[in-house]
Image (cartoon, rainbow, N blue to C red):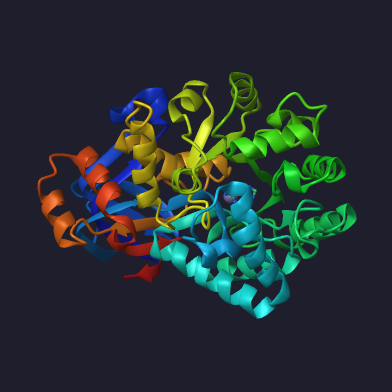
Length: 432
Ligand code: GUN
Ligand code: ZN
């Protein structure tokens, strides 16, 4: 039967809690029903209210588990999977010592690239992540490997090959013309294939010449349906370097702005050290920020000021930024986001955290018409979390007075182990 009625505790965001307040934004059904037909949501409500007919619907009982929309990871590098948790450096040294070597290996060894892409997609699903915005390497075959792996799972994923023409080892640099040819061919071959999307992906200002950045801006103008994905203002030495490399630009964002890379389809990872002016220009453009707390802590980059970004009305999503990020888990990433908030006297409410990890991320990726919550007609991408995944979590969850507290405890204590099942377009794609 192509029609399934999922019964369990269900929560999802109807809208941005920043505009309406947390209570209005969260829909929660203690005994909930998610009706799915042909991979799409038909309805989501109290079980008794929908009262599905067992002759019409196949019942799937999730017991005390919590069903949430699948997580959307707004910034991650698939090629860096194997260097996750590498000791002791800040950004620029870390790139040279760990990131570039593993990206060179992806370039040399296509079998390694394919196997890493396969593992990566499986690892996303193991963590309840159903969509992601992904960096490849400079090599065209890297992102082809990823797209093939995601297409095989019918995953809604956006990615791009990296553009780099300086500031890295020779075998990670291309010419502007080669970067353009490869990018245009990839857009042609993969944009809107299955549930895939393309992102034009200049790594960051220090690894592209002005010629390459403006060429990326030109491609973006020619393809208004693709995203733009890069890094911005992550680390103080990086910002200094950008100032030296682009003396005619007023600040870091101005480099991207002048190159034609700032628009509402741009996603900027990190943004830890933005000025008020940069913040207001990002807001005015309707661009999004990928907040990557585990990475920012791991590399010692600094504390992202979420409150001020949200007050400026910037759309923000959460990113793991593996391999500088130290976890694939968007639950653990929510937990670290909370701690980053605590260090700045801005406790991140669990409903807000869930928004960042689902609907906010979907908005950043411009896929909110398809995923991000359980509105009728959206694709049924969801995660089933087990509140008794560990003895400690079970004890803690048993004391939970309400859904806000349960969401918070799952974020703090759950991690990958709490993910029981992950469903893509109504199909069970991972079982613990
Ligand atoms: N800035 C430029 N490249 C990278 C990268 O691979 N990871 C992180 N965290 N920051 C970057
Ligand atoms: Zn990154």
